[in-house]
Image 1 (tube, rainbow, N blue to C red):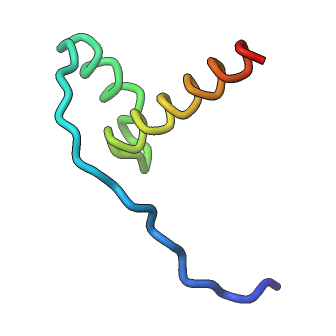
Image 2 (image 1 turned 135 degrees about the horizontal axis):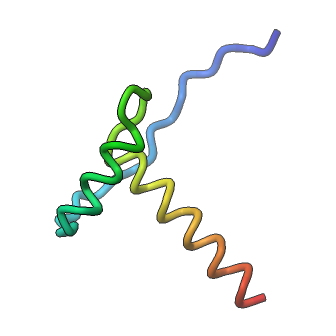
Length: 58
């Protein structure tokens, strides 16, 4: 078993963005009943999109 390490919380910055209502509804439906917040879903989606963009540029 590995040694316990206190997790590091990454630095964050608040950004206000507007989502179309239909997108909000779709995200909320996708995360319903799961241990996921709206913000966590959006952050992961953006990370995947950025990874895809970087892979396309290579």
